[in-house]
Amino acid sequence: MAHETTTRTEGSAVAELLLAQIRDIPDYPEPGILFKDITPLLNDASALRSSVEEMAAPYRGTAVDHVLGLEARGFIFGAPIALELGAGFVPARKLGKLPAETIEQSYDLEYGTAAVEIHSDAITPGSRVLIVDDVLATGGTGRAAVDLVRRAGGTVVGFSVLMELGALRGREKMPDVEPHVLLSV
Image 1: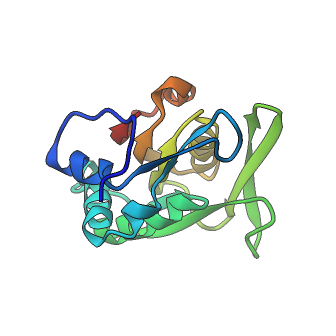
Image 2 (image 1 turned 60 degrees about the vertical axis):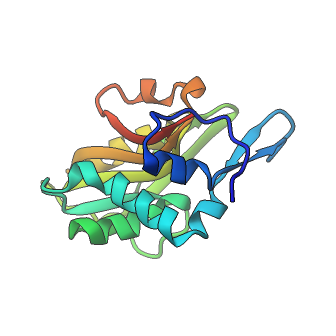
């Protein structure tokens, strides 16, 4: 089932499969925003499997101790990528959502700040961590995740995302980490 999309890719068969499962929702969550809805992709076993495999591919053969998934859709991709790589999974959540002692990292929003947190014992010094999310947009949560891993004593081995919204220039907030992106919008 094909959905209208404004995404550009390099034309690979996998990219075409994934693009066919992403639909545009205009004016969501507010007027003027064109939301990229990945729920059809998540509902298609072949597309979901391909996404996970392709997001994990550059890190096979690399020592990865943990995959850190950013709330909430980063969990969807992060946990199976962790299994693919033989690594543990670390959920990075919004403040107040984790039950044990946490460390947090703030980041700027257009109007204010927000923060993500992990359990303080989730990443041990020297751990090698792959960060995973569904979308790289403005780069705020990505930057916060990189800083959080480093504050915990870990080393960021990569940042893998399904889709990058290039016009928002999020990768500029992470000049020290090269994102692995399956689809560019």
